[in-house]
Length: 456
Image 1 (cartoon, rainbow, N blue to C red):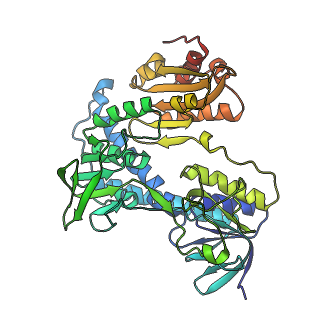
Image 2: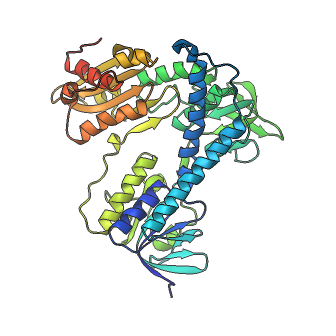
Image 3: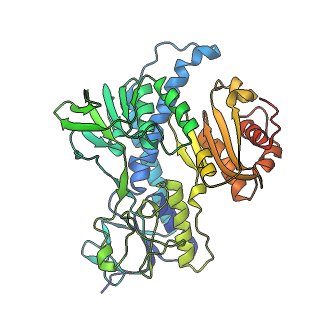
């Protein structure tokens, strides 16, 4: 017999899982979370948050190195990476503790261990079975090696790359998507010799090509070497280094970081026993309310289709719980979920690229403004950034937004919000913006799309 009965059991306590659990408790559901490692999951403890801690240290160093331009002389600065690592650990402990506190405040039980589904839709953790009226699967993703490699020794994934306790001298990064670009940008600016490899024809290959070109230019300025249309082969790990070949050339680095893809963490979940179906890509098949093929079981985050992003998982967690509670829900339009890369320069986007919009048959209009066109870009020392809006001329619809430069990851939200509220670029063009702010550039890009750019 099951030991305890819950209205909702969430397996996994990453952003999607803990948000789902808290929302379930808010709606009066007796809720438990199953976690096999640390509260907050991979994102909080090993990926998203640790990455931003190390990147922030690199940002501070860059600001110090550029201080002369602002009339400030800083003598004798250096990188004490042991303290960077200590801060990373402190931040993740603080945030994990914060989530634990939210669980206590919302009377959410935490069950330690690996959870799996039983044939009748309950949850087993170790030798104990827990009765569940509803189950939400939220275990996230795991790293995948590139062909011909296995993880271990000097061949590591992104999680290990953010957990160095001392700086390597050389680092080879395979994959120039968001994760790879962030790793390369952080460590190159901290003084590591970085090689960045990408099998496709450009860095950040899912971004608008114009933005990708500017991002590559910015990354190269940080001293790294970038190789596109390049496969890494013949990987061999030794005691103190890893060797490989690329484009017929030999390569060697202290570590080889594989940032070229992840897969759903479904091993041990008991999907077969419960009858949960997968799609052709090995993801859990769900409908717009995140229901799986089995009544009473939902799945969210990296386990299901859509972008593998923490904020997407969190919103899915809310949708799943509100569906469990019988509240009306609306499927996520995944194309409109903001995408953010925290390398330098920052890159952020949502919606369609210019070419995707043309391919879809829209009457495309583009608004484009450099940061230097507005006062804040010059004042704050970033004139090279670009804000690009993709729209449909017929209805003034916002089809996509693409930003590269300082605070791009914040600026993109304005365009996401405007589209969510059914505004178009003509509306953004006429919203009063504070001065001097980088956000004025968003307004000017919208004016450019609407045909009446003021500063440009």
